[in-house]
Image (cartoon, rainbow, N blue to C red):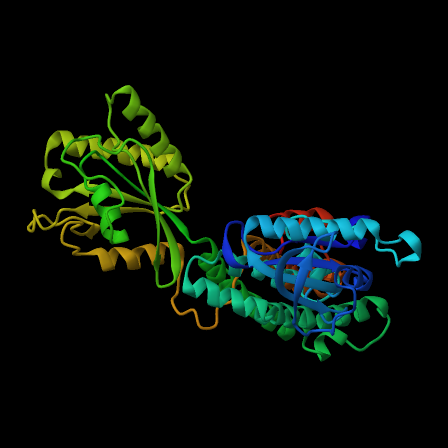
Length: 466
């Protein structure tokens, strides 16, 4: 561990602002001297004590609850002290300052000494829990994902990851991989033996079964990542095609200004909604056209920036003007620019709006009316299909992009391992190396092996007090 991991830490563990209750949390290797100095006596472990919180002169700062959790039976695996007071910012800051003040006096006059108590960094309590083997890295990330969940499905999936469902799947893959590695290593260590370890143990069957299990977990992880991150969808098209009306219809509220005047939307307007639990970030953009004024041109430039970063693009057409030569030519020009701007893997959906005003106009693509709501359900399903959502969240655990990337690396290594296994003795050393690399990729998911810089990136995204 780094030197900072040995310091006792404290922070306000509740969100900033006013609330009925606020919590100051302290974690360290031995907090008994701090508890004794704060309250004049010890606290019964895991029992709430209702008592006054006082300053150095004995005057009351507040009246609240104090709970003491001795190591290792605490969230962090260290001693943990929680002070629950009224949730005013000033009160909590006074309690924070009082803990720091008391810690500085410890060690004087023969009192027990407490190492330097300091303010916690972002995510440092969860990091302590990980370092003390109370949770693995996936569970630590699930804490932040549960706090940040934007849909009910995402919250339930985060709870499953926090309970260890995803970690257990990864552990099962690792166990199967280790067993396969042992077979290969045994064959490499005893090449003179006549017994074919790999054939007798059905190494090829084990590898195929493992590869199939990884593919299933990878597919589920992609679903979990969708629940966490969602999909960015940009609505693009000419002015007055109904982009803002479509945003409002999907959101079920008037989020964007709608007028008959071309160029009303001058900047991006974003709304997040959920479709079957998947967060969908819909972005309305300025109408794409030539000859716009200076302000509108800035909005159009921002529209193209949003299009370049999109996970999917809705190219909205106006059915009532679709047969007009000028409009059709402008649409064709925009289509050519879209093909140059979006990544090859990003779908561009042709959506024909105002079907209520042009009922006999049939086009290839999705027909809808932002005004009446016709076709919106079909559009929602098309967006889920673009995102790769297969439906059903009952067994999906929360996952992150790094989990998906690591599982994809495992899948690639196992594919190469299968190729080397086919070559038998001529490539057994390469087979062993691919299996080793696959195991390393799995280990990074749960943190069995993780670089310090990776831990820094993960825990720095947490809120203070967590």
